[in-house]
Length: 429
Image (cartoon, rainbow, N blue to C red; front, side, top):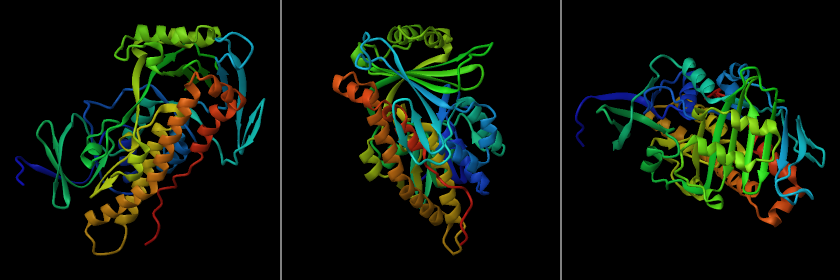
């Protein structure tokens, strides 16, 4: 096979400079392993406003050595206030709100209506600004670890290596190729994974700043029922992140609608009888801080039986397990992936023997695939089921949800977050 132009050699190429890509590069850097991140955009990604980071993410960030730096930029979430707009919750009208306040504690979840023993370790949850995390990750990396304006147009095999062609003509040859390029991953497509499936749902998200302070308690506030679910949480003393997930077909909502004015109007109409301070969160949001996304997920069976690792290539983050946001685990699990992958590659490369590095890397990627396949399957499946149960307007499911409100609002979050991906210390060989 002939390739025109100069070929640049790289041991490890990471496609995508989002959370998964930068975290993977940092994990490898912590182990003394060099990598290069190729990012298609012209600068650090600024899409998205904030994300909820659960216990498993903080364990992973601590393993990377940046946990405390992120904690300094956020507030610890100390509880969850869950509200329902289902008429079956109370004898009031359909749109009336009733509330159950739930507090998080080490080892259990305590509710005014029920008590469930979760036998957890130390629980931690915070809402952080996406740009804060990305900027910190980039600062922790060596200079020139990320090359922007590097859009991939083709991937080829060249013996035991991979040739990666960029739109501007550059070609890289790598021993290992790591796909961190999101839901529409080119790397995943090259590996033969099927395209993500539409969940038939959408999410409108926003971020609002209160210059004088918002005054909200550090809680996750959730409202659901009637086919929608709205939630918000403070990131710090002034910033609040909010989201509204719904099924467009139920409301004849034009899925191509990208007008932020109409997005806000839609959300306001669905929470019209909420307390004024809830309405104020959405109403105050600037138009350039509102976005809409169509929710997709990878078939859990494709994760179990598909090629998530293939001849020195693997996918992680949204490229591996795109999921609905109903567990708040998209970014958390991507950070988990990154720590596990860095450790697997580090242990494989540290093995004593005469094997070529590319052989060791393939072995490390295989270890990663075995370790992450079932975890990814569980996350995607649980998120999808939780979303359906929380948003459905079916009267039977709504009644069942009322009887076990804490289980539908908190337990799945806490259980899936009770996961330790391990550290980056290599085992002796």
